Length: 288
Image 1 (cartoon, rainbow, N blue to C red):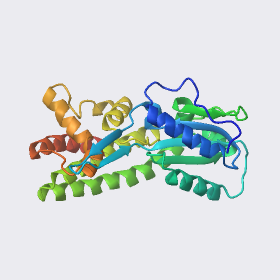
Image 2 (tube, helix red, strand yellow):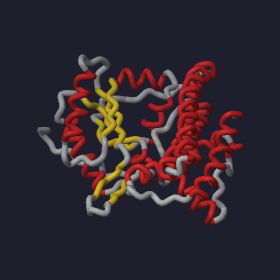
Image 3 (cartoon, helix red, strand yellow):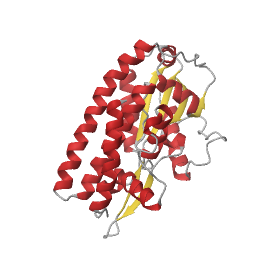
Image 4 (cartoon, rainbow, N blue to C red):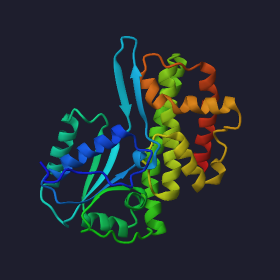
């Protein structure tokens, strides 16, 4: 075991729930007990932002299941090169999966300090977002991230084009799924596919204008990010009236509830209404 038990930093965001804090302590103990020379560990994604999902569902038989957002970590090693990093990472990820105290799936990325700094210098926005918006869980003080450099217009265009085609193609696949299940009157599955269509369309737009794809399934968060980058998107999901807000919420919920609840209540007219908004979103993304 580690010589000194890990303690969470005192400046963690207040929105982190107690059970997630306990999980982070467990994860850090496993990481620091490994032979890897860990220099910095950042928490990023939904738990860092505060838009995570953590739901307990109890079925008719009294069996409780838990759905929790992934805990996303960037683990930076204090060396420029290391042998067998993939092997070490695989062992750590297996240890996370086997630990009974971890409800959330642990999604950890392991990089050397050289790779992180090269990515920052090359304009990889993911690393800039983690360094500036992430929550630092551990830091030996040995690593100093270099300043972020914006990529050139040609570099952004090349990467964005590839991502656009990939993500937009998946959006069209979910559209086919929605149409099939809607006609079959499987409205819960139709709702899930419609949610995924909307999510991928928003990811597409954000990728085009920022060259970055957020690890989020929260449509409200993604919509706000997309609107900040492309104003014509404003109002694509109207929320002025209670009915409009309810319809948008019915689009938000299926990512978890339509998959994990045996009886996900959603009516045909709700689907029809939000499908019109997603169709408008598709037109805007295609013409952007």
